Image (cartoon, rainbow, N blue to C red):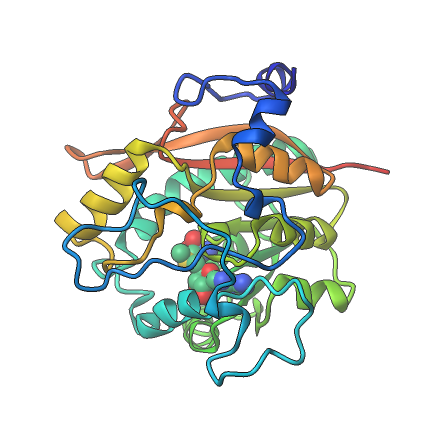
Length: 327
Ligand SMILES: C[S@@+](CC[C@H](N)C(=O)[O-])C[C@H]1O[C@@H](n2cnc3c(N)ncnc32)[C@H](O)[C@@H]1O
């Protein structure tokens, strides 16, 4: 029944890659860690010395990960029990933070995807907020937060489209790079960057018209709690946009084996297959956070043109647009 409802509400979606199932069976197949209220997570797989990337053959387990303990060995004091932070994930991004604006470096795929994901964001937000998508600054008057902004490659075009942008990231080096780069242009220099987590900003009772977290949820400790924080940052009736990678065999073959081990687009170990979410899981996680998914689309890569485009194929990379329920 839930999937029938979802099919009705999505503008762009084929569920051929993930056949519709009943709400009950959706919950049954989703690993409990996605919905648990605890911080327990699978032990992060590392590239290690094995020539094979960790993937589908490895069953995720619920053992507490070292990430609930800080790098210095003690439990984080200032963070709530629902910290979204996974230290090993942050270490990976800190190690390559100086390459954010190298369009041929490890973030090349994100640079290439940017126009496509911005097209989705532009069309969904403009439709939702009654803005003109053909205007030069369609997001004028909107407060948008880019959660897990990295070096700011999404925050900057959002600011150029007229939004008042806040960018947060848990890695301080990323925020420093983002700040320096944004200051190069007066239009982006007013982006408010801060080294911060979503849950911390919730404590400060900040709210935004639109909350965007692209390619972040697969790197956090508890996707369900993370989405609750995104929801808490969204005004009632506002919008939340999340993109991630589907936990499908195709994603294992392309986003991990090909991208990391064959083409070397990304450093080995960037992604763990077990941390990916299926579109159905993301919809359920959104629902539990009082967010209703209204549109979903896939991103597909054309190796001949080297370009990404929007598609109804959500079997690998996909993006979801949801709205915050008005209580
Ligand atoms: C794959 S990058 C995506 C960057 C950016 N959203 C984009 O798509 O261009 C993931 C980013 O999320 C950040 N991150 C990971 N866990 C986080 C957390 N719990 N809170 C905030 N940022 C986090 C990382 O530091 C990294 O910059």
